[in-house]
Image (cartoon, rainbow, N blue to C red; front, side, top):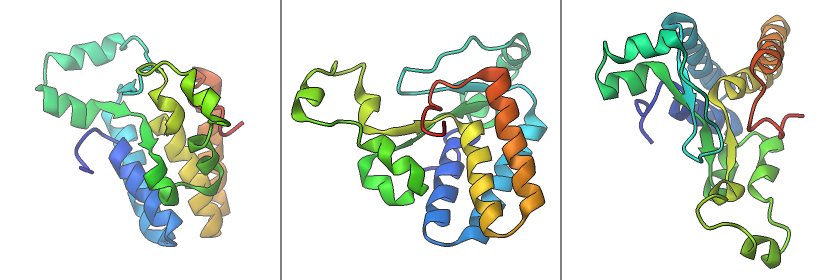
Length: 171
C-alpha cells in the first residue's frame, strides 16, 4: 500500500488498521492529516475502482487538470474509495466487516456477473464519509466528544449534499 496512491484512500485504510489494532491516537493523527488535505486542496474528484461510483468532475476540478501531471493530479486532487478485501477484515471497524460477507449461498455467488459484481466481496466506502466515520469512532474512544460531534455533523452534511453510493453500511 502506498501513501501516495491518491490523496486519501490509502491513508484512511492505514488509519483504520491502526484503530482496529488499538493505536487510536496514531489513527487520529492520520485522519486529521487527511481532513486537513481536504480542507486545503479545494475541489477534488471522488472516483471508485469498483466501477459503481461515477460523478462528473466539477468545472473547478477540470481547470486544475491542465496544470498538473497525472501523478500530481491523482495524489493531490483525487480521492478514491477505500476498499477492503476479506484478507483485510481485521483492519475494518467492526460494523463494516459484514460488508465483505454479502454472499449467502453458492447460488448467490454463481449468479453474479464476473466483472460487474467484483465489489460484492469487498467492503467499499467513499473516502470523505469514511474519514468522518473514522473520526467519530476515534474521537469517541479518545473521549473527545466535541470533535466527535463535529465529525458527525460533517458526515451528515456530506450525506445531505451528495448522497453516497457505498453508504448503505452506515444507515
